[in-house]
Length: 361
Image (cartoon, rainbow, N blue to C red; front, side, top):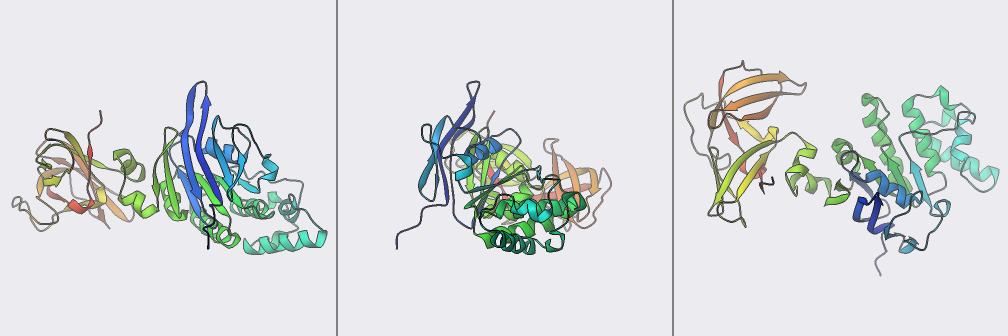
């Protein structure tokens, strides 16, 4: 059986403004039923990429395919309304003068009974059937978001494009709304491309993450792989706080007060950065300041003194000024741990949770 083409494929998309490429050679594939997140900071080209796929903006280079069929290049262009693409943006843009049911039915074709059946099906899926004859102003923000989702899905689009759709919601509602939205999208079997600048949202919703920076996709893969095998220091830092330890390579090893770290493929004398997240720094509570002893997994313990400690809810954040160079390292500890400033602590670094990158000036 021949392999089906991806539901959405973009090849080498480029968009320039004033001679600057804001989207620079972006390629991406999204299968039916798959949720892919374009993740990155504001201004990295995520929304521009979405607008080109939707057809509301033209690319300067590159091609866009739906189910293997070309829908747009720099010469040929299928109009936006014929692309079978649904859109959801930050502004839900519901029509205030139309009922909830009429909002959902707005883009539907067919007979009255057929439209009504589709509206009822979707409102039932998003849990809002009771509001079918109500008006948008009578709904909460989360309810309006679900109506906007139902309206976008009503014509059965093959592709759903979502640009920061949850950014206007209260933090307490977001997780529930995201989960409900994801369930409905999976049921509809659309290919979903979601734009977000929030790593937590991407990790929660995506089957695949495409990390963007400066108009390019710098890394792409399953959330677990993007998080645990980052391509560079910036990729690590986008998902969490980081600690950075500098060293130089000698014999494929980088020597530090925490022991030696493997640095394969780097020449002797090369400056490297050893990057570790605060949750992977271990406080050695058993040592009691008796001095560093080597361990197999955690390396060598290094001494420092507490600068400050703060309780963050589910964990405590402890900042320690290290004796060897005066740098401050951050460590997180589950539950409540609030040592006083000046208290000596011995820290160890999990070798299997470190990332070693060439230093870039």
